[in-house]
Length: 256
Image 1 (cartoon, rainbow, N blue to C red):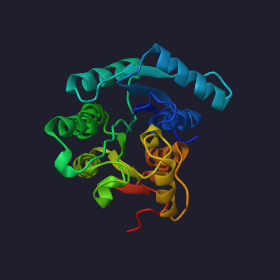
Image 2 (image 1 turned 90 degrees about the vertical axis):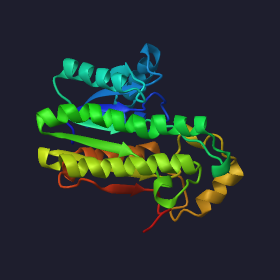
Image 3 (image 1 turned 135 degrees about the vertical axis):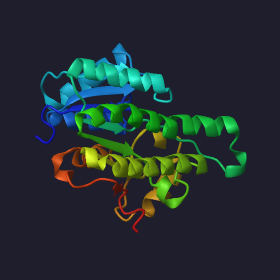
Image 4 (image 1 turned 30 degrees about the vertical axis):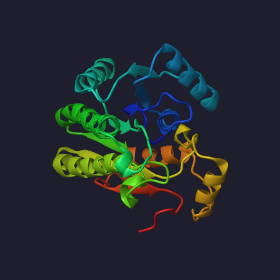
């Protein structure tokens, strides 16, 4: 098992179709002590997550769930403090929380822009900032941020320019953390998914989706389980000498 007894926070895990949920499931399979968080987390959502994972692993599991609006710094601080109170430490944080919107640049108003940046960039910054306080005192820790192909190609196959900009900022944040905290034993990396089977694809017509798939060298969309595998690699000691990296998980959509 790659994460035996490691304490891992996974943000953005409320939906059973999300990358966050799939990551929680895979991390538990590899022995991690998982805390899932989401703005919509409650007892019912946590119950559904627990039941679904237990069905997958065929055993009873222990998992904590906490509500957190990552766009609020005080909420991130409270989340991290509670995890430390419960488990005594934090070994890894995977941030897959985020929203996607599309639209031409000239039609994006300030309200829409602020919403995108508050969650996708400020939220990532606050969550990383809060957990880095713990990592600094521990002199160890690991961050995996879930960015997007949109950050690399300038606009997504689904998201608009404001989405791309927010995820581009996340990549720069990840690299900055890697440089600043590497000497303290902290690693920070990101994955860039593209066209993954999550609720973010629900608004795309079957015809549009098929045309996009035709342009992917592997000729299919990716699964959340495959994204979770990338997160597992970066979170584990297998990637012990990897920091500041961006791992493309896109089926060959963006080869550079």
